[in-house]
Length: 392
Image (cartoon, rainbow, N blue to C red; front, side, top):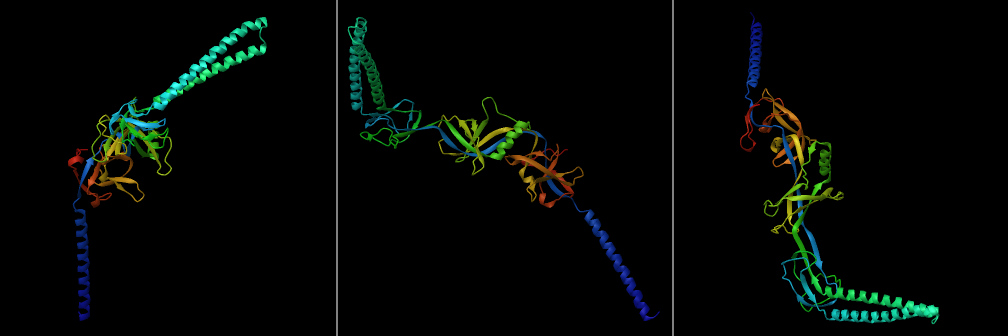
């Protein structure tokens, strides 16, 4: 064999060995991939249940009644009969205005009534005499008509005098300034000796009624419409009792729960053009006067119940670019499946899900970043607050 033939044979042998080595390496890689361990993930098992829909809404407290105290007659303040910041009752005397002028006006009105009454009596007697004399034609028809007219004028004068007495008496009563509503009274803007005028712009004091107290909250108009439509269609079960919908409060300043449960009083019939929200008003008992007007609160308003809904931890829910929600569930062969969800609203740290899940589904809550649809997993029941039964 020539040298050239030997070199060819050696090259062919090297090529065969190289191809065999590559095939052996490729086969070993596939086997290694098939034998790769499944990813360990934590899951929770979900079951359908009846879930109360509670809307957490921002709000502020509003006084149920507020009245500015103003004088209705002119005069000098003689007395102030309350303590600033105290609780006053409706009708309680607050100020005393000098009565001297108004007492004199009442006496003058009474005197005018007496004069008018005397004139009327005289006119009545004259008319009565003329009635008799006219039968014998002792007086003319004109004289009798004048007597009748004089009597009518006398009656009108008496009525006018009585009205003046009523007006004088009312003005006299207005010299005693009383509280129009019960509540807490603020600082007085005048002291004894000050001159006040009827219906002046500056209030003498302001009374604010704190018990009961209102809480005004706002909710998105679209969300409120969906709730109402759900109740109308039967999808959502109304929880409103005979006395209305329950409302609970948390104080923003302290985070404490308010002890008393309120009732939803009404909702506005218009949507705010700027914010797109609707105002809801609740009324609360406030005997301890913990709530003061203008405080920020968070109101929890019951808006019905959903049957056959699921609570899914928020950390298990992912979003696609279009905003749609989905979760990873574990199939019976321990592989991952993506499930699209229909979410009603949030509830604490969970989402309320109405579509997309089945009873007993295992939802992955930890290890989401390491798996994808079709990936094999080793499921482990989550511990702590999310712990659920591991069995299907």
